[in-house]
Length: 419
Image 1 (cartoon, rainbow, N blue to C red):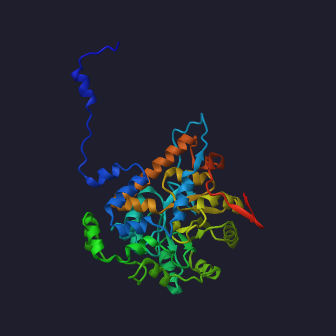
Image 2: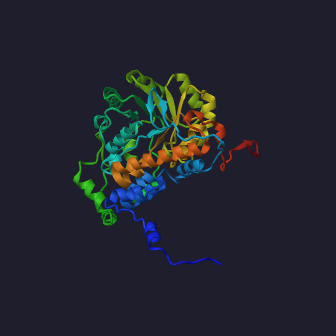
Image 3: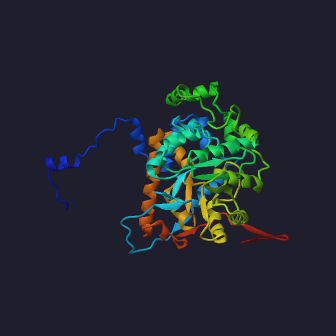
């Protein structure tokens, strides 16, 4: 028989531990976000549909993005046992300088569209965390503005080669003069991808007030208040504005860029140069042999060529082909610190986050970006401890198995053979 007794009032008081109420709404909702997906949910609730879909969406059927995220989910970790890691070292040396974490903030265009603090929030959060921040050619804060927001940290610049080459050359010179230490020369955008969410939403830069946008704004007055009471949303480095994203990109980008353009930019740029948008082994080897400082395996977040290769799947083969002494970075699909750990284990020297950072920005401005970094840091540290590794250098391919859903088919004559 269970022995029962009259509840002791003193014991009841011990159980009544009420949290102090948090009256700051932004802090309350960010504290409740435990994952990047949680930040995405908040961002979707707080951001007009056209702006959120521009951030969240990808090209055509969005297969490249879906597959990239699925590839990280299809990871099996292999922890070591009886290998205590009470503290872990998440720092890394990348492209001639330090980073406190094995990821930096990727270049994103039109960032003040998502939330008015834009690149200033990203650069400030990166400075506080001790990680690199990358400014896009299509950014909405100037090179000098980002330098002011991150005066002592590491700033990188992402470069598109424009039809008017002198625009690209001048941006390169300005970034060098401002002390940016790395240039990401982007090669996967000869023309704009078909971003169908934007077309269906009638999305343009800057956003236009229509009956649909006004109706959508009613439950999100804070976004429109910020948009209408802060400086005009426009490119900080380009004079072209107005039109759909595809129209703007097609007007600015040049599909004829080549190794000759890379040679010109290398003559102008005094710092490290990496090629962003590499999607096969052959190009990786050729770029290594051409003497660049590194590459970023990327399909542009699935926003260009749909059904493009999955960077995470490509990573082990590229690492094997280029050797251990060549810098290989990766982006696309990263939504968890465990994704970053898996990438490092399979040979990535560094990773870049795009949407994960923007979800935080939309969820809470600068504080939201800080929360993104905090979530990823916690997940990285916890994953490393559970694997039994105390530093990133201890991560090895044996810690990870890539489980395969998409199996390539080799065709010989009329026969199809699964590899």
